[in-house]
Length: 622
Image (tube, rainbow, N blue to C red):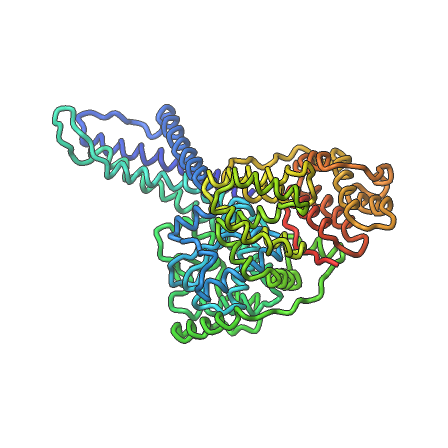
C-alpha cells in the first residue's frame, strides 16, 4: 500500500512539475517573439496535453522495462551489471567453494540450484534477482569471494536466499520496471536539450531551437522529482527487508557470527561494498550492502540501514568500529581456507521429523536442514556432479534417470533416442547409464536440482528436443510412475518458463471447501505411497488440518489415479496462499503419520509443492 501511494504521488507531482516546466518554458520563449501566445498560468487544454504525454511516457517506459526484465529474469539484472555466469565445472577453488555453498543451500531449501554470476568489482557485495524461484540468480562480486571466508560467505548467501524465499526479489524486479518509467521524464528533457533540427529553408543541421532547449531544461529539472521519488520508493522497500534478511540468514545458518563478520569486513575494507557501474544506481535496492556512495552523515538517504546498526543487531557486543582489513593478507588466508575446505565433510545433525518442524522449515530452513542438504550432496558421486554441470551430460543424466528397469522397455527407449536425441548426448548416456542405475534413489531430487541451472543454458532448439525425448522416455511403458510425474512437474515449474511464456495460475478459489475433493485426492495419493496401519484415520487427521475435524469426518479416503491427481493439483494451484499452507500441512501430516518417509512419498510431496510454488526442504528417509 505504501508503494502504491508513493508511486501515485510521484506520478501526480511529475505531471504538475512537467506542466509548470512547459508553461515556464513557453513563457520565457515568447519574450523573444514578436507577440505573446501564453497569457495565463492555468490552461485546461494545455494541462490535458501535458498529463496525457507524461502518462504515456511513464507507462510506456515502465511496460518496456518490465517486459525486458521478464524476458531475461534475474540473469538480465546480473548481465546489466556486467556479470558473467560462473562455469559449473570450474577449477578455481574460490568459485568451487562458492558453487558448493549455493548448492548446499538450494538443496536444503528445496529449491532448484540458481545460476551464479560473478561481478568484476573489488567491493564486497552480492544480490539475488528474479521474478520467482525458477528464474532467480545469485550474483557476487569478485571482492566478496576473495575477502570472505566460508562462514562469512555462507552468511551472505543465506541472506540472499532469504530474499528469494520470501518473495523480495519479485517485488524488487517489479519495482525496477515501474521506476524506470518515472525516471524517463528527465531523460526526455535531456533529449530536448541536445536534439538537433533541420530548417525547412536550409538543409544543413543546426543546433537545438532555443524554445525547445528552454522547455527541455525545465522538463529535465521537473524530472528530478521522479528521480527523488524513485529513490524514496527504493529505500522504503529495501531498508526494512535487509534487517529481515539478516535475521533469516542467522536462522538459516544458526551462526550469527558469520554474517556479522562479513559486515565487519565490509566496514574495514577500503573498497567497502561499492559497485562502480553505470547501472548500480537503478539496481541499488537489490544489493546486500550499500552499492552506491552516499553522504557519510546522511544514512537516512541510503538504500540500506547503517552498517553499524546491522552489526549491532547481530552482535550486541560490537563496539561500533571495524578493524582495518589488510586486503593482501586476507585474500591469501581465504584462498588457503578454500583449498582445504573442499576436502572437508561436515557431520550430519539429527533430522527433525515433526509436522511443526517441517512446516517451520518451509521458506525458513535452519542449520539442521542445511547440513542435511550438504550431506546429501556429498553422497552424490563427484563424477556425476561434474556431469550435472555440463549441458550435454546434464541431458544425458535426465535420460538415464528415466530409463526403465525392464530390459525390453529400456531397449525400446534407447532405440527411440538414437533417432530423436543428439548424437553427442546419446554417447554420454551410454557412459553415464551404469553410474545412474546404481544411484541411491534418495539422491534423485538433489541431483535434479543440480541439473536445472545447467539445463536452463540450453538453446531453444536443444530444449525442444530435450523435452520431446524426455516425453518419449516417460511414455515408453504406458505408465506414469511417481518419479516420472515429479520430474515432469519439476520441469514445468522451474525449467519451462525459461523457454516458454507461462502465466502463473490466477487465484480463483478463496474458500477451502471449494477444492476439498481435489485436496482429498491429493492426500489419498500420498497415503497410498506410505505404510499406514490405519489409512482411514490418517486421512481424517490430515484433512482435519485442512478443513477442521467436523468437516473432515464427512469425507472418505479416495481411490485416485495419476490423471485425477494431475487434475486436482492444477485446480489446487489456484487457491489463495493461506489455503495452500493448510493444504501442504495436510500433506505433511499424511507423509509423517507412519513415522517414516519413503522415496515415493517425498517425491510426490515434492511434486505437490512444486505445483503450488512452495519450496519443500529435504525431510530425511528411513
